[in-house]
Image 1 (spheres, rainbow, N blue to C red):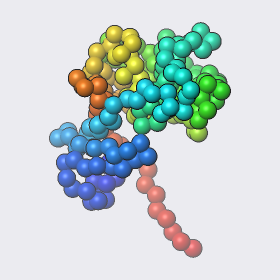
Image 2 (spheres, rainbow, N blue to C red):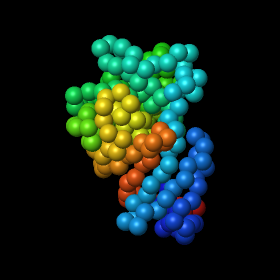
Image 3 (cartoon, helix red, strand yellow):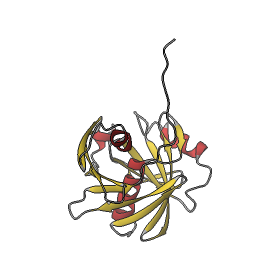
Image 4 (cartoon, rainbow, N blue to C red):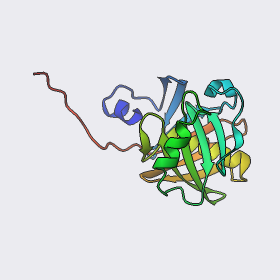
Length: 188
């Protein structure tokens, strides 16, 4: 969206605000053409995720679940291979009765304390090739619970992002935007 705004000359400033369903997000255009977005503070309150009780380090059929609100509802699951086939288990967790409004499910592999691999099953659409807010949620949990550093590079199937958790707990996402298609609308 940010790249589109630049390409279409909707904005021409090095930073701008975007109103989202999760509130206002500030985007910064970097000198290298990448974008940095302040995703804000993760929300661990169960009510924000439509939960009656927290799901944090929760055992689900041998998997540990960590649920938080990072622009939407995310559940983080640590696995040995993030790029395994996640369709079935992702859908099962997403649609579990634990989650009245469903949840995005992020499968996270810790490569080392500076690098993660993530694949996401998104509520409403299934397995995705990349999910920025899912990567942010994953990095936050890896930092809080698994001893990873506060600056992480996260690889997805179609790219990578740099995530930083600052001293106040805010999550910053930095990465490129690539146009993959352009459409034209014709009225008949």
